[in-house]
Amino acid sequence: MKTPLYRPWMLLCAAAVSTALAADPSSAFLTPGQFAVTPGATVAVHFDVGEAGTARPASWPADRIEWLFVRGGPTQTNRHEVRADDPQSGAVDVKIEHPGVTLVGVDQRPVVLNLTGDEWRAFLRANVAESNNADAAHLPAASHPVRVRHVVSSKTLIRAARADGQVNSSPIATGKSGQAVEIRPLFDPTAIRPGSDLPMRLYVDGDKCVGARGRATHVPSGHAATFVTDREGSAFFRVTEPGLWRVEFHHASPRTGDPAADWNLYTATLTFEVQKGAGQ
Image 1 (cartoon, rainbow, N blue to C red):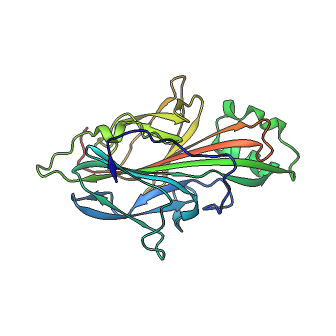
Image 2 (spheres, rainbow, N blue to C red):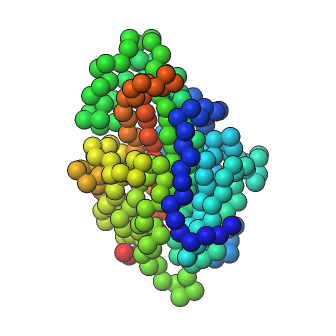
Image 3 (tube, one colour):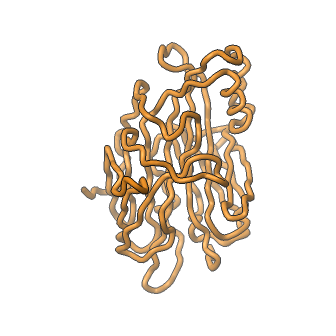
């Protein structure tokens, strides 16, 4: 079903628990088989899971897909309870109908992860800004369990060639997606010139996320840049080279009065490919 662009109601419930992509707070990067296609092409999209520089394909988490959407041209297609079109590869087929940028996004149902105090402290130290994890000192002893409600949103940008060969900046690439957690580039990264800075704004539940630490990784080289958002939820990194980039951020906060979980963890990822000849 195709509808005009809109922000759908998010059905993310705190009690939702199911089989996770991983038993730890790993990032899930939505990855198409091709980032550059022609209009009308069908692209197989899957998840890569793990550290950004070495993330590997994972099975499609059909029991955790809350919402998959494809935004291209003037329309948006929304799907729920999505299963893999190819169970062996764990991929879902997406048709790229319009020239320019198509945004594919997925929100997963929250899952409660059971970690030890040591595991959670280690994750916070490695992935969350110090200003965001001050309450970590109040965590229980090292071996005591910590229940973390993990909310995961992922999106990827696919560019379809225009008939005139022009590579123009797309408002689809820079608009808000309406996901539970999101990385919103303020320039179109599929049209940016290597060597330029890419500004972004980060959101949790629609609000600007202040003091969040993120990481942008150029996969072919392994080069990674970290950033922390300012009072406007904004940050930037230098796009040093063409090729595949994976961007991620995590935001943590303690929960109170919830018998099912002790902490919130919000994770967002963005993948895109920078072309050698781009020139935004």
